[in-house]
Structure formats: structure tokens, C-alpha cells
Figure 1 (cartoon, one colour):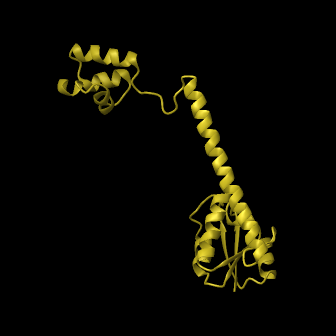
Figure 2 (figure 1 turned 90 degrees about the vertical axis):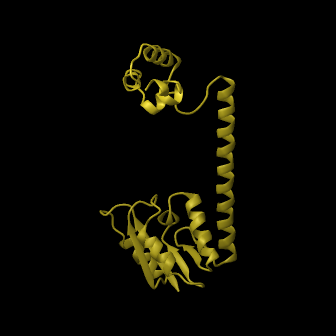
Length: 186
């Protein structure tokens, strides 16, 4: 049995074109969502996937109706494949129940993995180059050397840790983390 899934991003958009195309393709049951494809908690998609049984085919009008990112598409189609459910995209003419359709999908999958690896390599190279230039990533320190000196001086003068923390602009736990001896002052 062919199961259809249609999605539009907003409630003001019309889903009729997709539904008509899915019916023409032979879908007996059609599920739909009116929400962003970036969301993973789409009730219509979850219901469509749960409804499918071994030997069924989940059809969409276009690939981007199933999901916006290639990794999400691959994960969803892989899940369907594990359950013995085929996948069909009408516009792109991808049908994983055929040998050619499986080949196209596996090529997409390999390209997505290649892209992830390239991004990972570029990120590592960029971080290494930044480190060589003396830059470190991450969040800026909340306690600079100047703030530490000021906090130590104020604590030595008998100022309560809460007031010191307020003056240097940090929380009391942060003050204690940077100046563990200040705990004994409290």
C-alpha cells in the first residue's frame, strides 16, 4: 500500500497540490502537517511512519516535504528501510523499492557523509590555525586578572563576598570558584 505524506510550512499555505499529486500516484492514505520541516516532532509524519507496514511505500511530493536537512532525510529513510517500508519522491523520481532508486539514495547518503567530513576537517583546520595565532575559542572568562586583583583587595579589606561579587559583576559561586579562599571569609 502507498502511504502519502504532505507538508506545508505555514497554516496560510495550501496543501491541495501535494494531496492531489499523491492521490494521482496511488496513495490510499495521506497524512499531513502544517508546520516547518525543520521540526522533528511533526505529528503527521510520525503517524505516517507508524502506520506503515512491511511492504508499504511512503510517498512525498518532493524530498523537501519530508525534511529540510539531508542527514534527517537519510535517517528517516534508513528507519523506513529497516522496517521494510519503501520510499518514493514523486518530483525527484526516487523510489527505493527499485534498484536504481536505492542507488540514487545511497549516492545522496554518501554525498552527505562526505559533506559532514569536509565540514569537520575545515573546522579542525580553522581551530588549529586560530590556536597558532594565539586565539582560543569558547566563552570569554568572567573573571579577568583585573577583576581577580580587585576582588582579592576587597576581600582583604573585609568586604562581604556577596558585595564583592556584585561589584566585579559575577555570581557568588563564580567568585568562590576563582578565589576558593573567599569561602572562608563568608
